Length: 116
Length: 112
Image 1 (tube, chains in turn cyan, blue):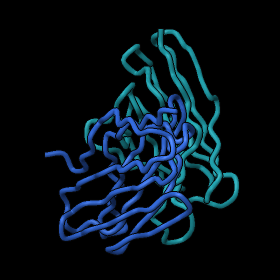
Image 2: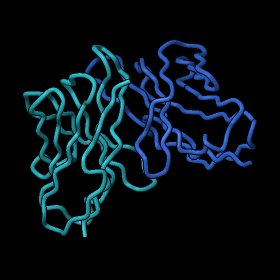
Image 3: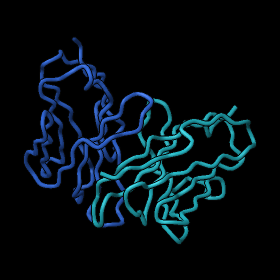
Image 4: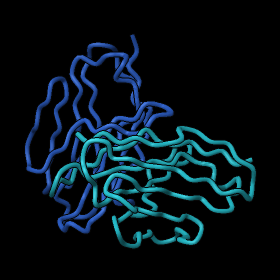
């Protein structure tokens, strides 16, 4: 399956600051990447679909101006949480579909964000 | 009704026994079905994918799909303590634009 990395693995920031999370597809070129958020003891919630070279597609209820997604290359997508607040504290995970036409998604190791 | 439903557990199974995890889904047009394992504090890892009715076996894991009943299950044979985790059922619709919907997961505990 696909090998996906994320950086940083964890981050603590003050309320009002912005945090950037990187997601890299290490072993193949991904035209599409997905960003999920997971609160404690809850399931994964898709936030947005990141498309290389075009705008991301956001799920209903996700503020696109708060969660900025950039997919500038076939191996890198970034999620920036702008003006973070304590309620944004969560586990953010990216994923890629492995292979052309594959429905299987492989996840990065995740980034735990804590906003003080 | 949730799109993908799982019993949250915890499901406690003795070591060496068979663990049976179940999942139902609401969209009859769903075509792809997945089981992920998620250890506490970690991201999900894909265990099995199944697309056709019937059983699919991979080592100690067997996925079972019944589209008529809108039911998918995962059997873990010879359960080991390392199998203790949360198991997420995920379902995807027919079109390439369909997104994967995850269940809330079943917490499995293998007791020695």
